Length: 371
Ligand SMILES: CC(C)(COP(=O)(O)O)[C@@H](O)C(=O)NCCC(=O)NCCSC(=O)CCC(=O)O
Ligand SMILES: Nc1ncnc2c1ncn2[C@@H]1O[C@H](COP(=O)(O)O)[C@@H](OP(=O)(O)O)[C@H]1O
Ligand SMILES: [Mg+2]
Image 1 (cartoon, rainbow, N blue to C red):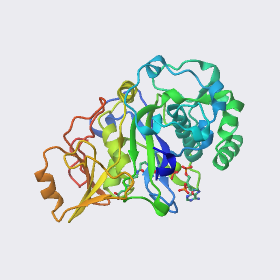
Image 2: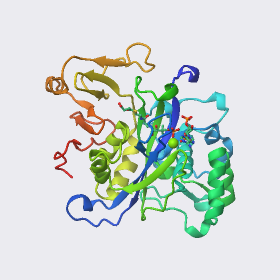
Image 3: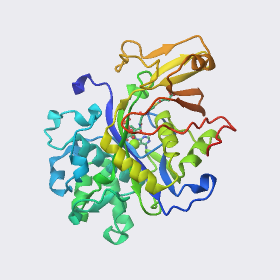
């Protein structure tokens, strides 16, 4: 699609999981890893105060050809084949005059944003050669990093000027650890749920598993006002108790992670599955009399010709109650939102590209029996 006709911004985000070690016991304690959640500023023009994964809008600097000499070759499995991909990765970008493929640039974007927003640097030594994708990644040893004050100064420079991230990598003789990020999903903000100024985002979600304890993070006191490392079921509990608000895409992805108590299993699944392909999802809103639903591809009510630009019919409506709409449907793939923190995913369709369905964790009190 012509970028001038595309009424959304292109962004990348990373589901960063850290831990491993596989100490298993019953219940939530069986999770041996935590994921990084950031609280957006209450002043954000889009999803204020929401808890999200680190990420943000791609910058022309993420597509700079100057990255090329620094980056490792993709692992063979990544290079081979052409699985189905969302348009985000496939789009040609003659306006940037860049030979950098989207699949590389959006990874750089996610890694840069993770540094800007959380101070976590997902880098690898530039001379490391090909990565070993079968294993969870590791961060640079502390000895390869500049002192904290200097790194803080770099962080502020990158926030002001994303091109400074390339300079930082050159300075450290490191490269963004792009092949530690595995394509996981792609969410397009529903037409009709745009933020202030019509903000919508086509966001590439990557999974990155670190085989080490969660590294120290820090918020930037601007765009991000708090951070926490949390086990996926704990994040759902915090949402349920209204301590935090998690937007639907991130909620959906956390419920998917709840299938994997062990980091190694999550990493293996994410790395192998990514080779199968990925599909862009734009939820379509169905407003009922007592709440609403976000219909997802595969659901029997999902429109054949969804209105991506929101010019025709961005929302569907019904006079019925949610309960009655649900009873009438056989093929379900939808997020049901009864109020802000009462959210349930109803899905009985086979996920595409060997993906996994979320665990059915209704956030109503008393329903999380599978945690
Ligand atoms: C794209 C972002 C990383 C934010 O970018 P920023 O430059 O502001 O840091 C972030 O928005 C993100 O992770 N987006 C992912 C998907 C998305 O856009 N979700 C929005 C869903 S909004 C929604 O569903 C409204 C909920 C409702 O009431 O229905
Ligand atoms: N102090 C602050 N409070 C709230 N939002 C801030 C902020 N400083 C920067 N931002 C916003 O954070 C966004 C940049 O995010 P990212 O770098 O993750 O893409 C910008 O939003 P907009 O692009 O919507 O204007 C910017 O306005
Ligand atoms: Mg951001």
